[in-house]
Amino acid sequence: MTEDNTTISVRRMYGLTSVYGVIGFLCYLALQGLRPAIGFALGAAGSLGNLWVFERLSAGLAPGKERKPWQAGAYVTRYLILFGGGYVIVKSLGVNPLPVILGLLASTAAVLTSLIIELVISLFRSRVTH
Image 1 (cartoon, helix red, strand yellow):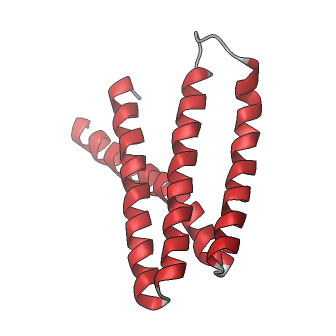
Image 2 (image 1 turned 180 degrees about the vertical axis):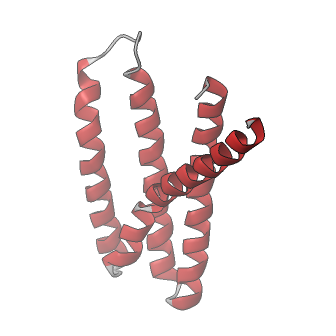
């Protein structure tokens, strides 16, 4: 994968995470009301932030880059922050944890969708070259 393809793939994951966040917000708003929808949106925003932190930490650990000791601990710390943030969202909104948890999984869905897109693109490229 070239650097241009990697950049496109990362941008696609950000876009898909945002799209899943908006779709989930609208679905929760229509089906369960404003508070669960806000819980989902806040969870999706946390998921988007987690994706951004993961990208920055991974770029810092790339070969040829100077490694800093705090970066390894940051991988674990970001999950603790996500868990704590989810707990605060649930308690402050007084909602069921499910919308917040599903919102936090928005970037996971985006990564899986991006992988499927990459596989389909790769399949069509290989057919064109043969």
